[in-house]
Image 1 (tube, rainbow, N blue to C red):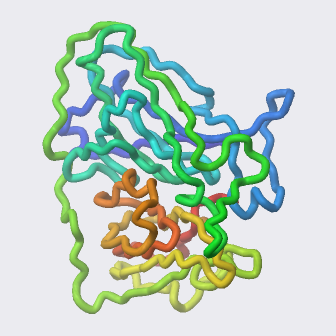
Image 2: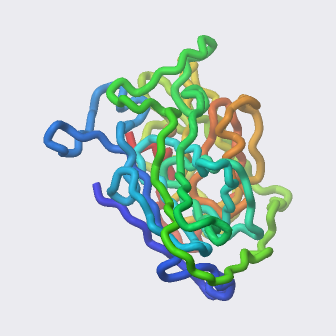
Length: 330
Ligand SMILES: [Cu+2]
């Protein structure tokens, strides 16, 4: 279907004088399949439904491997993973670190430089791209680098047998070039990366007595479940009912369940931005870990296989029905 970006700013953001206008780029990543007549193909085969639909060509805002002709100056780039199920491990082709300005819910306190950014479905990235020191003619590719399918994909318990979606020729974790930034012209405009972007409590300390709710993520009876229940748009259980404006710790426990099926789940809560208090367990060698950004306001957290992620959420003051779900669309 259609998807796009809605950019929300405020006075704090505007005061930073980050690159704006022509120097703001928006890249929406979506993997898709096409038939011989170049029509979109959506598969409802069982494997695609269990692992999530994976395309075999990655589009950036509707174009495959676009080339952006840019100038020798700084850009602000927003990236949205609008894919059904594909996780990207983003990195620049020449090893330049990614300078992260913000995530789903806004700016980080300070820019953060890391070799890769792991972007799961629904997650957003706000980044700084500085081309001021590059010669005209220089080329920089944004890629999703290779990772083991077991890092994000289905693994049967014990056997460590990675299974990839049957229908896609581009398995989860396969390296793929997404786009090219080409330095096309000289423009001498100095832009300074601010030291501080925003001010908030980086490591939230929950007040004593905040209720902790454990939410197991599991595969059972051929269905993915949260807290033992299947997705239901309208049903609300007692343990999902909270007082307006109250603060809770919700702990997502990605244990797999009785069949030992494991998968990384991007857990998304509607209507609130929350903080990640802790991330424990999991496989220390999971290569998606080095791309995580856990220190901002977020509405989608990727819970890797065998991990427990504790999130602190202050729910809306407005009563009503709010959805939370795994953002793998199938
Ligand atoms: Cu899931």
